[in-house]
Length: 345
Ligand code: 5HM
Image 1: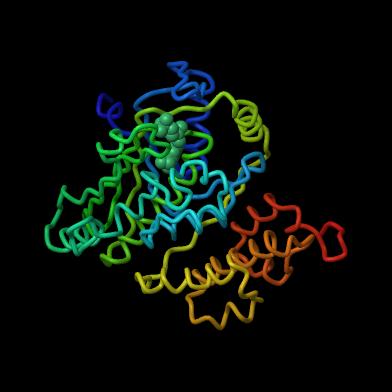
Image 2: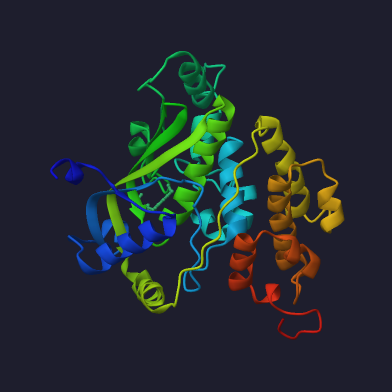
């Protein structure tokens, strides 16, 4: 009984963890805070575990997750990038976190983990993988994100919220423990869990291990007051819907390497800059695994929404999407449920 108090609560999917944390912050919050002008309700020192980290997307009509952004952010991290040009296209709000209008700072976790630090030839990620390949049951596979030097920058608009990711190979599985100094439960948590579990799965694939559990710990878990109404709507939906929607998320292909990420991002860039437009046949002919074809389909649909500002996206592309991302696209954008003549499908 006592040991149960020391372990984190387990959820089948991120959706359950998200809803439980919102309930906690909305009802039994511990503190009223106003850090940097943001009034919020806060609980401190909370965590949860996902036994299957692939169940990384919520399906809630009142919390319209953008699957295009989720994949874009995960790929941006995996490619070690920090440019605003790419990520700002999918999340314009991130522009305000950049101090120079060109790069992100502490929140460019991929840059910290996947790019060699000054004076080094290997990235921290590659160093951790090298260690984990040779040292059984290692406890040293830690990828720090937060750096004390960030606090030395006056008025720093972007101090890493992620403290670090800890990779733990045990019994043929790769587990991960994530430590966050702060997490906005309504706005940050979902995209963070999505991207960090993608990094975990990518690491597992590189090591030839099965995907293990994902454990998420938060120092300051909070809901900003300006999101209170949406949080209420989300909780009402969860309490009143007949049954939750659930779509299993597929496994990352075993053949995924750095080159695969670079290949997907070549197409991402061509679509983001509107230099190409793809139909289903084009995407099937790109030489990518169907898992990654799905991601390119999302980028093409987003191109149609942003560059063409179409009233109705390509119905064949939409019909070829897996049921989960399709559900999210249809709930997020009216152009994904409209017919070309302007009616509703
Ligand atoms: O004042 P502070 O630096 O903690 O503000 C950053 C805000 O962004 C916090 O509310 C934090 O919880 C949220 N955040 C998040 O939840 C930020 C990032 C980017 O580092 C993130 N998740 N990944």
